Amino acid sequence: METLKHFDLSALLWVNHFAHHHARFDHFIEAWINLNFLQGGFFFLFLWWMWFRKSSNPEADRIDAIRILFAVWGTIIIARALQIGLPHRLRPLNDPTVAFVMPYGGVKDVAAHFSSFPSDHAIVYFALATAIWARYRWLGAVCCLWTLIFACLSRVYAGYHYPGDVLVGAIIGILFMYVTERALSPRAMGWVVAKAFRWERHHPASFYCVAVAITYECMDLFEDVRIIGRFAVKIVLGKDIGLFS
Image (cartoon, rainbow, N blue to C red; front, top):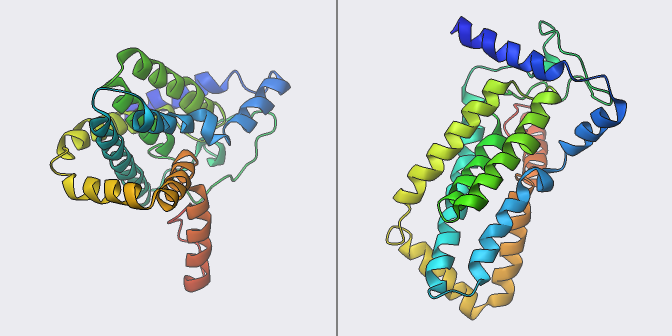
């Protein structure tokens, strides 16, 4: 275990040694890590493409899109449960015992109450990339590489995560999507699919309004829901328990 911790810290500090040398690059990274859509949120557009694309079996494509969406919701719940239930791990930029060099434009105490392990970005985006890879190998591989560089490595550089947070998150996302897609077979999803198709046929306006809203929140990793939930909990309990952070 100590060897793994040492390797994790060494990998973090290797990435971090590039920081605070080029102000423009550092400021770009600090701005980039707040752009969930560009980090991997746009992967959700794949579900819309499946829904509307012309194919020999459009109903099967739409069922697949619903299955993937439910699986991704599961990954978000798993990520949140692990971050709350596992021992708290300070983010590198908030840990005084780590010789972390803050990039230009970085801010200390960012989400200090929120555990860095595992990375929810890695879990969700690698899960989506896995679903895409299962259908289009080359496109899924590109999505995995994009997630690794632009969603994960950038957050390690900024001190939001250790490399181990990202690695474990990627493994969880890949395995969960692989297992869940097999568990959520078209037969198992029959009732949900029937209800969704009936809603889309009889009330398309409300169906697509809700679908767009859900897609937006998924792309932003339910940031609005987190903010509202955190505020509500703080009002009711009088304290911040980090549940929706």
